[in-house]
Length: 472
Image 1 (spheres, rainbow, N blue to C red):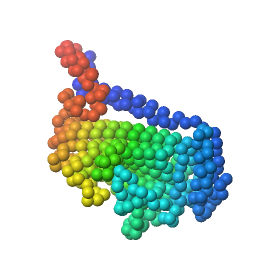
Image 2: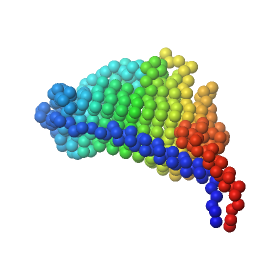
Image 3: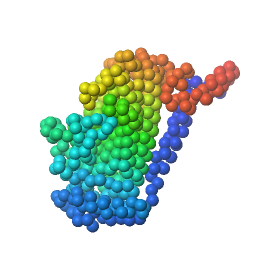
Image 4: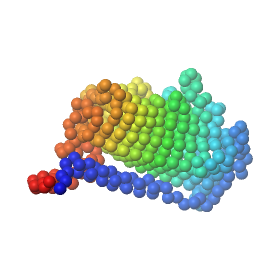
């Protein structure tokens, strides 16, 4: 008996092979960044008078230790070792060619005194603090204009003790925007790995204007009701790899950003070449992976695979609005498993907070070439809320091989969206019902890259095979 294969069967195999090629490429890029020489010089924070009792403020000890280690930056770099203990500190700066290493029982604690978190200028791509006009409190661990920086250890902990900040924020008693836990600006060759981050006052890990960043094997935790405690937010940064992370916070697990309205448009530094792999997590108010809403400098070439989100608000979100400008394009997300998620896929074009009254309401975002494939989900309330902007349709949205068990009677709600689909259950909304195959694979980001050269040959081969007699 000769078995016959449908065109869809063959195309699915090809798509899977294309996925493997992408994965191999992504793997080599991520692992390359992990190659680092052992630092020839090392000191312990205790050599500078630090006391790990959880009460003594050690800001000066951290500052003095790093000042001392700066003399080795041109001699192969240095390592600052933080041993077991509870090391209370305010904000401190890192330097180039430095490894900050935390012992497995070491805990760096953020001070509860806001004076220990200095106020710095707003980011130029935002024009003001994200929450309040004016400046912003500097992150607990901070660096700018650096090269070759490693924050790692034997699964030590950095705890921002953010509850006091959350209370101030909710009571509206803050004068400046809350601080992040870790922020690196204008830096290259950054590795953050093998650590646990707890209770950030605001976003947890924020590489901004950075390149060649890897975040690997980290756990990020904050209460599910903590405000805006995003996990990892690459912002106007390129060549970023995030892999093997567990994140449970009060907002987005990962949010890719690139500036806010007219300031982001003017600064014009996109986030591009972002790889996310093997991410597990949940939240109550945010998304597993979000793009935006501050995306005015542009976001492109995002590849995310092997994602597992459970008991969360939303799995995948693109957030934007009139006045944002910028673009989100060439996004490829695959191999996603969902359990107990309210909304699987969401495009929200009404995310309307603006930095001031000087934004251009006619600056419309360009959203195009978004491919999401190989998604399974159980106990999902809504499959998709996909809302473009009137007069600004989101183009070439492609959904492939998606199977969701949905509890809502209206699984899809779409407007101002154009695209294609194949093998989606429950059946997708009208603007996406046109099939990807055989005519629209070239309109779907990444599918055409690996299929275009082979589809013609396969169609011919299948046609010839179908013309041959089949013997029972």
